Image (tube, rainbow, N blue to C red; front, top):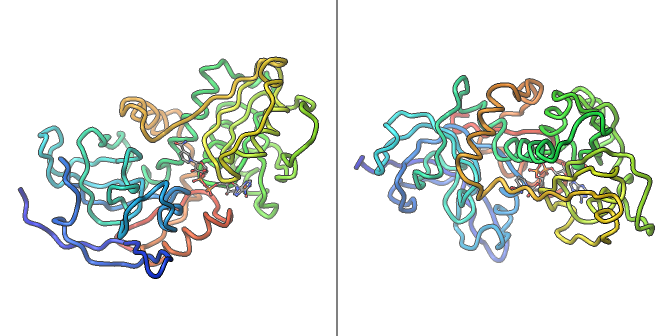
Length: 332
Ligand SMILES: NC(=O)c1ccc[n+]([C@@H]2O[C@H](COP(=O)([O-])OP(=O)(O)OC[C@H]3O[C@@H](n4cnc5c(N)ncnc54)[C@H](OP(=O)(O)O)[C@@H]3O)[C@@H](O)[C@H]2O)c1
């Protein structure tokens, strides 16, 4: 057992009914029980972190709490004996940053079964550029491919295209040869989405509620990161035999649809979970992103911040104003 160490963490506390984040000094003795103590150098920002930091009890039940569903760094000690001190690892999902103190602190302690050895060729920052959002985009694409999606079926729509998941999905699909239609509420971001590989950028009004139960089928397949009405409208516009990977709920968790897209056009609605899937499934997608699925434009355009910038960056997620991938550096 190593000695306890003091460290900095961005901690969220409840103050008179509102939730406030600030930098605090903690000790590794304050961390939960677990096998692997990790010195975290980088984390990544996700919509779920913004929910946790704003006191959403569906994500985090008890405060004070350190959010951060993603972390990358070095093993300090591993009681399971599987990971030697100094091993570079990344952790995403499971309970990290939800009810287990997360990557917005310089140390985490987690079960060995949550840790993935760093893919070869990657450093911690690169891993956190992808993070949970990249993993989710990869899983969405993989599900479409499993269903036989191919470019000849027609354009793939990506909703919430400028967001963390959406932007990686746009670049990866384009790289795989698909024509991508980015659906985005940020008209001023259209050029960036085209630079990522979108052939067309349309406004969110393409998916506002329509009374008709079916619409002209224009998309071969789709990746939906927003849920709610936009997902229902997307399902009406998928060509026969096409699929929609669904992973998010920023436009709402409800889905009001008819069965018509499913029974008249054989459309498939594919659920995507990046959190609780087996570690080997996560590792397989990381392996692809560190190889043939590498997204160099996403890597080049990622924004780097320090802990003092977390508050503003997380609030941008809740307002739908966040763009692309943001990496937290504990050394900044
Ligand atoms: N299933 C999983 O395992 C998993 C993993 C990761 C994330 N997620 C979920 O995926 C979703 C996206 O996560 P993220 O980290 O990419 O968030 P994000 O960066 O905030 O991206 C979401 C994007 O959706 C669009 N949007 C925001 N509010 C909207 C609204 N009211 N109606 C329609 N579009 C809206 C915005 O893009 P535009 O301005 O371009 O339209 C926004 O940038 C979240 O719901 C998150 O919880 C799920």
